[in-house]
Length: 344
Ligand code: NAD
Ligand code: WQD
Image (cartoon, rainbow, N blue to C red; front, side, top):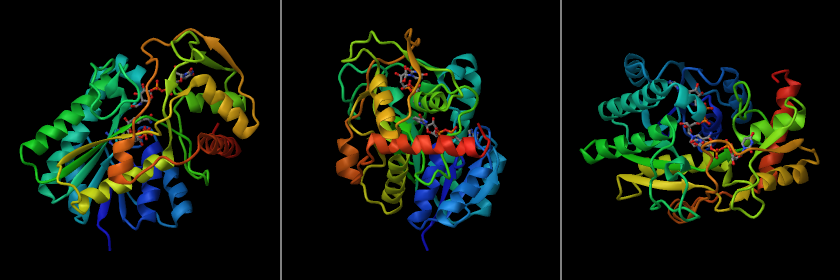
């Protein structure tokens, strides 16, 4: 029997896909989530895919007593994947304390309890946001960390430092810091996917809602950037590919495969794609038109960033292999499923 893995934020977008991959790899999973940005029905979706219902604790990770009770209840937990965080960049500018409190207290409570409960390691959801506007693309893990442009981004930088400091101070566990580029798509079964709250701020959920007619049209934020077609460039990574990297990362710590106590990996495809390129790819993949217009630049946007994923490819043996068309088809199928269910 494999040891149990605690997935914080496990009913969220990336968390739910990761729970599925952990279960497929034979790990019992315990989820803690306060449902602040997800809902219980996600557990049904996970169960429909794998046939296994994960253990679920509805609680807030910033509540130390709740986290203590959880570790006492599930002494088999040997690894943690920490997704629980608030993640809306714009909201973090309006409510910085909410972001610092939620994201940092969650992490500190987990680190505190790990040492006391013989947990071997923690995988942390970091972000390419730490690279800001890079001087050179693609970015490697050694590319300079730029001053964060939002409290959200700052919580990711500070979290990486907190984990490193705690481990350097002798904490008896390891960590893998995963810097995600732009996660998109949904599980091919369309049982789980992204559930944006209100008007989506991110490109793909807005695009699929525009294609569905829920939004009048997609605004392409800027076509006067220094890129081949003038729109911004990102590295869009399939959420299931991303989820699989977490299983490898957690296994690496549990099986003590590395001499390093803290490891950092970029998780991206290595391919930069423009906003207009992505719209084209979606239309090609689905045959569905995306009503769109060119709009002014969005304040604070990065012009171009994409990953050099070679370290993850070589060291973890992990590759983001899903073609973007397939990912976008899955995003569309998920959008259609939401409509069918009357969610939106
Ligand atoms: P999400 O909002 O879908 O999932 C986060 C989950 O955490 C939600 O289910 C929410 O209810 C829960 N949660 C939040 N605060 C909590 C708390 N205090 N206690 C318990 N549960 C709590 O977000 P996601 O897109 O799945 O992102 C997961 C992680 O990956 C986050 O840490 C995010 O910052 C990071 N990340 C996301 C992206 C992205 O584009 N989606 C990119 C880079 C990094
Ligand atoms: C992608 C591209 C937009 C919406 C954000 C966070 C980052 C990370 C991922 C977690 C950009 C363009 C978007 C729209 C558009 N999260 N766009 N019209 O900005 O790369 O990153 O999410 O760590 O921290 O900042 O992602 O999906 O918002 O935008 O033209 O309606 O799509 O300008 O070029 P972004 P995004």
